[in-house]
Image 1: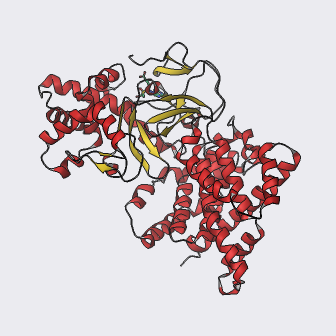
Image 2: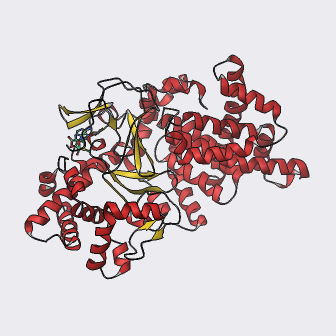
Image 3: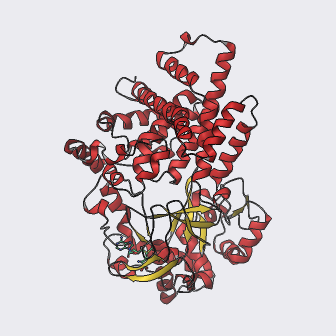
Length: 543
Ligand SMILES: C[S@@+](CC[C@H](N)C(=O)[O-])C[C@H]1O[C@@H](n2cnc3c(N)ncnc32)[C@H](O)[C@@H]1O
């Protein structure tokens, strides 16, 4: 393969007894450590994000469209020049010649667009050569899979002007199979899946629903990051799909890769609590929002038969609401749908099985909805519930990006609630005019040093991001900006000194007691109010 890792690389490609080839570590890595950065062979935005992200670096913003084809947008002249040199000079020309209507050009499906780039640029075609595409299986499959591939191949051949003979279409169809089988979804923490990323060495990593590594993106590049402790000789396994989804959904998502996953989660249909209980990263939680690691090891759902069958029962019917919600603009319509979904999963709520999908998704959407409606005193308790009862069981490493992003959501809501509580204290507004639950939340918030809590959450995020590359991540930039604002606040000398001591030596007895007092206890109190908020506004009692 053209881009095989060098002999000094921490990675090696070797045959795997049952999965083709695999990617192996040549040295050890601890959770959260960056294994290697990768630059893409192929990177392009998904069609729905063409006007929102830069077509070269994929950073979200206000990119300007290419004045010739209007089917690519760039954040600045540097990105535009780099893209022009890489592929866009040829792509721009063939798109203008092949599709006269600008709007149709912009709506070209992402795989067709990827294929056009692969046909136009020899380096991309060569890089795809050694990859697995399961061409024969796809040809032989029932249904329209192969027909769709051929149609996209024909379109790409026609638009790229490279010939539409049978042989050209066959080659293009093979390339498309390889693109489909080896691409990553380029994920953005705020927007979701914004593009397609392919790199041939990274594409050698096989799948597991209990992965030991994950891919994160910074601009054009991908970082391979250890999720569990990795030893030299271990196979690197990534999750091709959302690994906490129920088994039937995972099977469906993996079907097009033409294999049946045999990981422990799949083989024994383990639930999220059973996987968390045996995770090698559980102990790292001793200094997290959920420091009692025995709660992971002995969660009732690891042994209680009725809880397990309840989880399986929901798993069989679990549909994702995420897609449906994305299309609904009106907050009141979204609230209606969330209420009905929450009630549908009431069995899980009653058994406190908060980490079972799709409950974490529903809770996340609810907290975002409160945030959008500026009901921060309701959004915050729900975010605290997610950070203590959903995320840690789904993602046991405290450095997992979803855990860190959950902490940022809490910190962000705290900046609003802290300002409101300060205003109420100053103006002495009587709390009696608000509803009983709101009063309780206000009371709890007044008892908490919200600014210190926010500051400590932000410090935890920055400490949890990978060394060297972490500072450039969007989350780091956002967390640092908030932290700088807090550190400028006057009159917090005493708090600042305690926080600095905790920052310097988090393991000392004093620091641990301070963390428990300033972070763990208040977040727990808010999380239990989160359950009351949900019950009142979305549960059976809600109108
Ligand atoms: C992105 S490639 C990974 C590299 C691949 N093993 C190769 O040799 O080219 C994806 C393909 O690898 C194989 N694969 C990945 N994970 C697997 C697993 N857990 N069990 C069996 N096959 C797997 C499947 O053939 C799948 O379509």
